[in-house]
Image (cartoon, one colour):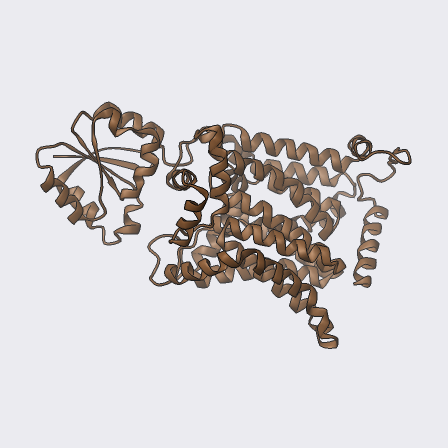
Amino acid sequence: MGKKQEKRAKRKADVHDGGRDLDSGISTSVRPGASALDTVVASIKTSRYVQALLGLTLAGFLLRFYNLAGNSLWLDEAATLTFARQSLLGIWGSTAGGEFNPPLFYWLEHGMLFFGESEFVLRFLPALFGVLTIPVIYYIGSEFRDRNVGLIAAALLTFSPFHIFYSQEARAYAPMLFFFSFALLFYVRANRSNETRSWALFGFFSAIAFWMHFYAIVPVAVLVLHALVTRVGEIRKDVRNVRSPILALAAFIVATLPLLIVTFNLFMARTSSTPTFGMQGLDVIHMTLSQISGFSDFIMVPFLLLFLLGVAYTWREDRNEALLLVFMMVLPLVASLILSSRMPMIPRHLIFLLPIYFIGIASAYPGLHALVRDRRAVYLAITLVFLVSAPFLATYYTTLQKNDWRGFSMELGEMTGEGDLVVMLPSYMAQPLDYYYSNATDGTIELGATTGKDLEAIRDWHPEQRAFYIVTWDIFAVDPTGDAVDWLNENAEFVRQRGGIYLFVST
């Protein structure tokens, strides 16, 4: 490990001597014995990296908290509220009983309900974790390559449409990324120094990420595999060299043991039948890369080319670090491709790719510096990152991004009368509807249905009452045959559609 530290020190010196260090020539005036606060203040005053990182973090705060309550809750966010309303033991019981999400995020949201149940309150934690991930990405990039790479990677996350979107959603994706980013930071440190503390912290933060979202186990397994592969020579010489990765793995298992048992049972249940929603096959890879690149195939192509260039630059200096980039991008995508035939696979499950993807792209920075030949090229890179994201940002805050249950519920309340039936297809869509609509206030009767037979039975039970049928595309996840939709087309009249929500009324 001593050689790695020497190589890293030489690399940082080369960056400084090569005129790429923004703080070159700046001296910090911190008196001996100064307090930690004085040191921080001096860094803010004198370090261009600290100033730029603070600026990016502030920008990230504005982008993630602005209009946070603008979109109405959609199904998954309403489900978050449903689980958060339970007791702490009740939340664990729901996970153990078949809920396909770990309990930690629901526990945190349970605590947030002390402040109310508004859209802003429910989305506050994901937005906050999203902002706090920005400096973590900077430190990962700085550990991995240098501060320029860290700053560009932080900028890519700051203006990432994908990350902004899920930082404004009351789900566990942004919080999981925050804790996994810490795990990755300590893994990079541990891989360089073999420090016991860093290995233990890698295992600890990996465990928290797993308690946030089950799919975090995939990148954690890839990191452990990378540690074993890059140490195979050392392990052959002395088997005791495997102790550090095993320590991290042991820390992870001890901290997640109850959840691992539940996970196995849920995995068997999830893969017992063909998925009825999500993406399958190569669409998983294509759509994931497109979405993490900014929901754009046009941007995806140059981003992938820059990532490959970053891998090439990294390979010249440290092959183990280059392998980390390749392992962490390729293996999770391949695993998701294979699993997509047995379980629902959606790009947001792979949000953990963002740190490695952006650090790989940022690692192509020496090429930009060679063209510009100015240490301020890093500012140009940050500007280019912002300009690439600008078209998304220009429309994101003024366009509804999710099903508009708020607006739909207002329209429904104006149409329904006392004694009318309100039938949800599928029945669980009542969760976002009931957040905005009260059948008790309107005097309506709320029912749920899944199939055409369900709808026929409801009509037989209430032959004289007018029925309003509310249906979304989710119906095809529970009724792939389309039987319920066929029944609606034959026995009800289409009234209107709003933001992916369709309304029919009985004829």
